[in-house]
Image (cartoon, rainbow, N blue to C red; front, side, top):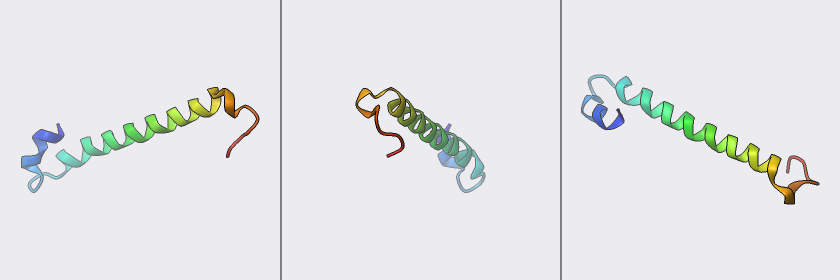
Length: 51
């Protein structure tokens, strides 16, 4: 969708912004999920909370 919207960026910029925002939110959400899982499941981090 982002690749196809390149030609419309000056006519209809939301065709590029909307899928780009979804990709950014997905990457940030997966990073936060990974950090949370690491904090929860890492055995070397058992004695430390919220460093």
